[in-house]
Length: 420
Ligand code: ADP
Picture 1: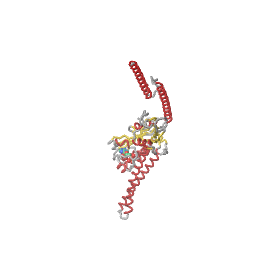
Picture 2 (picture 1 turned 120 degrees about the vertical axis):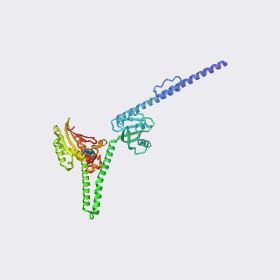
Picture 3 (picture 1 turned 180 degrees about the vertical axis):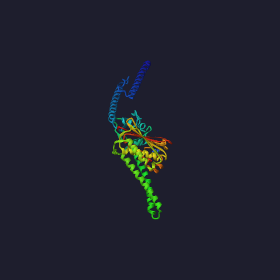
Picture 4 (picture 1 turned 135 degrees about the horizontal axis):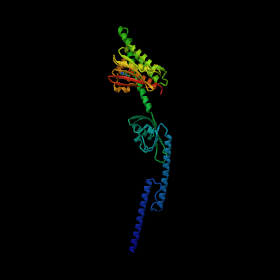
């Protein structure tokens, strides 16, 4: 009897252990299948009808999930294709700021931003101000549009960023956030050039104006008791600074006309050799040029060319005037014109002190002077070379300078024979 009981208990235990092991295996397989989102769940070994029902429900859930994911990636791909041709970069991130969508413009704006999908937003767009904006959007604060500076490698990029919360396209936790990035770097650069220009103009005008004002005040107060020679000295100072104001205004007007949509270029067939010869003769006759040796070297191949003669004369006059102003008496100045392939090359060369290497890249900028004092003393406005550059460029040409300090400067420009 005891033997029978023991045998029955043993059998019962063996069956129970087999069932427990089968359930455990079924649980493991189900977990593995769910984790890997395998839509076809493996047939479970054991587990009975409850297990079959559980497997069926899990299978349905996984199938629904797969459909939703297909739908979402389909919608995102469609959205991405729609946004592909936009100039603005568009980004959509999920609730954890992982990038779900980025259109092509993002890589155009940030060349280093490739394969950004699934990356965290802050790893792609590094900027504290941008993170503040993201936090504000997430907190539902209004006015989620800002101009933000980003750094991509060596470059600084200004973007106008607009942000908004959006409802997820699927059942994932929300909200998602949408960012539109508009590149305003060029506008920012232009703005700072304009601000700098206005500051420079004000500075240039202030000096002669305050001198004139001081002289006039002194004359008004003391003219009755002032010796005649002092009065003359004050009046001469006023005249000098009024002339300076006039030439500044003249150059500023010329520049703004050249930069406008109608620069007033009047091209006509011009014998360049004659134009240079006539100009050099005029300069030689001026007392300021008396101590300099001016020569010309015109290649006979330089014939008639289609240019605005007055404007090209202005370029040459400026280069020759500079060569006289910035070289000591006795210096040599040579004006040369040569025919080259499809163009005429003109060069104004002197053997004066030249221009330091560090100043050469800036020499054509507005108001840039190597020696401010010397430029003002000689009536310079700091705008001559900038005007010359504009005129040459309006003729589709190029102007540049070579200089060896101590040995002289050589300004050259080309004028294409046929407009490019
Ligand atoms: P400015 O009215 O001062 O002459 P420019 O634009 O014509 O203005 O010239 C800019 C600066 O370039 C000058 O202030 C001067 O320092 C320098 N420069 C121009 N030509 C020469 C030259 N031939 N030799 C040395 N320096 C020169």
